[in-house]
Image 1: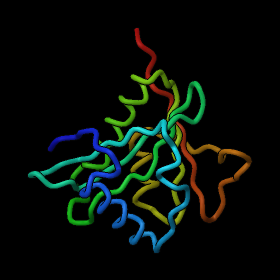
Image 2: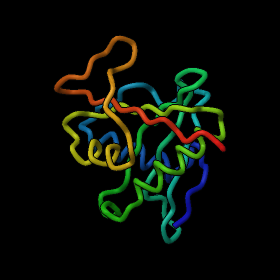
Image 3: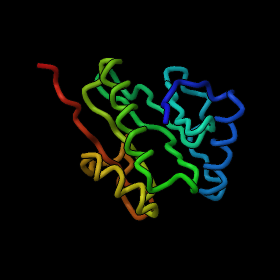
Image 4: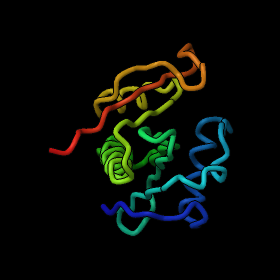
Amino acid sequence: MLIESRPLADPEVAALVVAGQRELGGITGRDLGTHGDACWLTVVVAGRAVAYGGIRVRDGDTGELERLFVRPAYRRRGIARQLVAALEELAYQRGHSVVRVETGAHLPAAVALFRACGYEPTTGVDGLADGPYLACFVKRLPVPA
């Protein structure tokens, strides 16, 4: 398994984006192309892109995970957890001390992933509150010794 930086315009990554949107029933939320500060990582297994996710700047101290998606045939192999760890490392390298993520409350696998990775429930951003549709989490990154 390899985790590498690839642009969203890469054909394999673009196919992952479409697959992720399709799985969520066409719910796209924020436009992926509007965050010039976002960095995207792709997981490659046996030469095939099987997962992707991004980190963007929320504010000076906070990075926000964006659009994690793993192809269904590759789930339950620890790929998402490794991708989250790689994105957290990228956030740390960019100077963030906190990482946030918002996910659908109706996505129990996503909620379980973030809790297993050490994320704590928090309130939404910009006045959005958690509710039946939104689950927000935050994690403080380790401070260097």
